[in-house]
Structures are given as structure tokens and as C-alpha cells.
Amino acid sequence: MGLRRTAILLMLAASPAYAQPASAPATAEPVKRIFVPPPVQWDNAMSSFRSALQQTAMDLANLTGGIVFGMSPGNVNAHLPEPYAGLSWTALPLASEYPGEVRYFGAAIDRVGTLRMNLTACTGKASYLVFLFNSNGLFRLSYRLSADRTCPDTAEAAREIFARYVPIGQSVAMSVRYQTGKTQVVDVTDPAAGYLIPTRWGRGGT
Image (cartoon, rainbow, N blue to C red; front, top):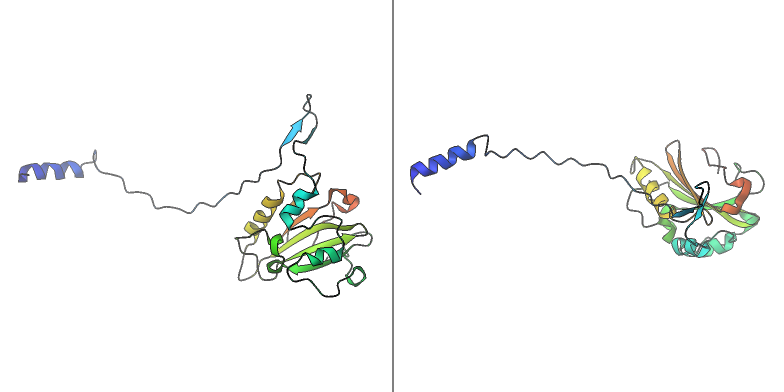
């Protein structure tokens, strides 16, 4: 290639018409989680709906490693990787935020096996899962994820847990996520729990 032709090609490459713009630096966009609720079927008037899926307690059991509402404290305890010795109804403390006799026990989030929901986000060292019981047995799973120095924000972990329960219809399990102080909470409640359903946990409670 001659010098003249080489010079012309270099001039063309440097001209605005041929110059390639510098690529913008990649920015880390926050990942927005998509929650997929169970499908519903509306009536002809579009005034009411029902679940389009025929879900049962077995769908919940498949997610929780066999734990379902109505189980006794002893049965729930037996499903944990590290069950407590000598656990019984009378030995459980009372949950003061609930009306009536509600008892509970908890386990560190890292020691609940399948119930940890294969979390990838951080949870904080003091995070735990509470099992709440009334006279009819287990009626709520309450995940309490507390931020600390090792995990300043547990919101993503709460979203991961909530996303696993949302596809379970409200006829089987009612799921809600909220925050109290620096703690993210995910409650999964038996829809047959009646007046206990709206009660939420706050600092100073269980």
C-alpha cells in the first residue's frame, strides 16, 4: 500500500463521520425482583375471582420440607436439621403480642434447613425464623432478618423469601412482607387462623 493511500485512510478514520464514540462505562443497575402471584379466574361480571390453581397443603409442604400448618411444636421441631431436646407445648414461651394463648420457638436462619429457601443474599448474624402455635397447632412462620455490620441491609433476603411463598395461593398460605425498625419480616400465615391473621410483630414483642 502506498504512503499516499495510507495517509488518506488514516485521515478518514480520524474524521467525525468515521470516528466511533467512546463506549459509556457500564453501570450496575439494581436488580428488580418480579413476584409471580398464583393465577386467578374472574367471574363473568369481573366482580370477584378465585384461584385458578387447585393448591393444597402439599404444595406448601413441598416448599417447606414437610412443615404444614396445624403441626404440633414437637412435629415441627422434628423436621429441623438440629431439633431441640425436650421441646413441648408447656415449655414454650408465650407470644405477648397476640391475644389468647399463642406460644412459639425460634431457630437461627442458618439452622432451619430447607426453610432457609436457598438464600443468596446476606441475612445478618442475628436473623431467625419463629414458629408460632395456638391450640390448633402451627399457624405462622415468621422470618425476622436483622441488619448488622456484616449485612447492612436484609431487604434483598426478605424479597427472596417472599418470592418463594407468593406463588402459594391465599387459600393455602397468606404471605406478607414488612419492616419494623432495622428488621425485615416475612410472615406466612394459615388462612384459617382467623383473628390472629392481622397481628404483626414489632420490637418488644416475641
